Length: 115
Image 1 (cartoon, rainbow, N blue to C red):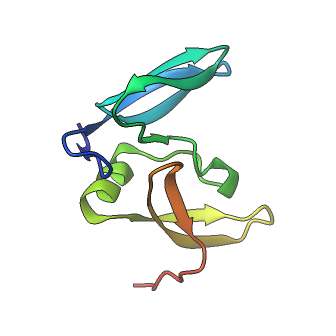
Image 2 (cartoon, rainbow, N blue to C red):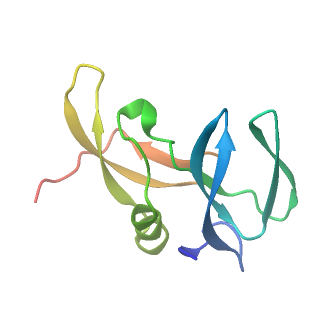
């Protein structure tokens, strides 16, 4: 268990691995969610919560994976800072917060203060 679900009263976020389109992918899901897969795609089947974070959610922004430590920080502190990369190789940092529908949200309009 990595922390409490931000969108339901008694759910806990757990880490699992799923085979999606032929690749093992980490997925962090609420214990109150129930999913099934068809042809490599994941669908919700039943459950009172559908919150989930795909481990590869930030891949299009140049981050290989979201790890359990980052998910734990998101759940306990309300977010984490990710180092992302543009297609031209520029490195930048952005705040990542929970989003009920998409799992996470990148706050592109907020600047990260350098320590």
